[in-house]
Image (cartoon, rainbow, N blue to C red; front, side, top):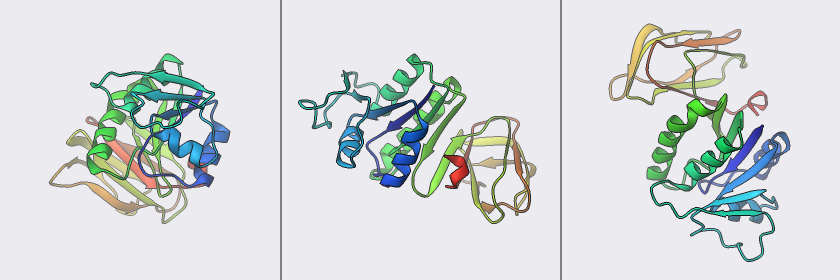
Length: 209
């Protein structure tokens, strides 16, 4: 099962939301993300959260799940639901933007839930973001923006092929060296790392949807 989640961060374009909705089996809004969906003309199958932001609970005809737990944010609640539904792939919109603290929290949530799905990715109209497995390959056009970031603080043994500025086994570490603003060269790219949590960000392209 493939599930789309819309959180309450920056609003995606209707084109991006519509494209992902067509590909997903179920559409879940995380609290205030339900307001965004309805305003844009999309009906979530489920709205979940503490519902302190959702303003359509009286006229919403989909599934409404109220979870008052203040130890988890609304994205965590939505991802827990996706896990209970045995989702294989989860695409998340609206996880970034608006407030930096919320964006950083959601990146922490990305790391927390990544082991439970084959693919868990954040989308916005500019970027595709995910945590990489130890060995990852993808085909992207030449000159395509790629950034790598050591989400765990330090990532050891990073080896890349097919990028303009290659890495040959050296570490990436917050405050010392990251891997932002690289780009693809000719052919597919391959990224390997020995340990740590490596965040992959690339300019959005149709093949990533």
